[in-house]
Amino acid sequence: MPSRKAERWLWLAGVIVILDQLSKWLVLAWLQPGDSIYVAPFFNWVLTFNAGAAFSFLSDAGGWQRWFFTLLALAISAWIVSALPRHSGEFRISLALTLILGGALGNVIDRLRFGAVIDFIQWHAAGFYWPAFNVADAAISIGAVLLVLDQLFGRPADSDGTARPRHGERS
Image (cartoon, rainbow, N blue to C red; front, side, top):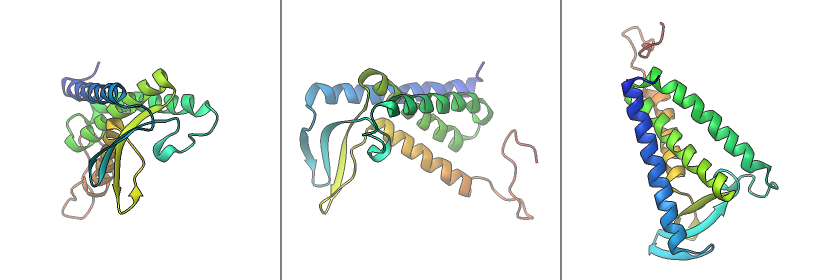
């Protein structure tokens, strides 16, 4: 049974899934595949279906990647759910894991419903177009950056220069 603090993080992951799915529902209601709506000089709304992973990696692999990425996301999600109670008192790590969990589950829903992930946010500058992404992708990316930052800068050092153990770690 998750701790009370871990339950709060799981609720936040649920909110991320809801926001992701709601945004995709709105995009599907307003756009057709291939549509592009100008929003600002650096930003468009588009509708694409990505059968692969980030940057359309393996998108043309023949279909097996749908189940591979679905199982991978579910395995990572299960690991995060088991890890959150151990880290629920550590804000940065818990937030990072929660963002990744919510984003992974949001994209799993798309893979199960559509066989691909719905992407709709497109940034561009000086003729360069960043691959389209979605709320779930943004959550995963922010969570991954927070994990890296936590690993680089998260553990304050003792006076002798060694890293202090995290809450629950043995020294």
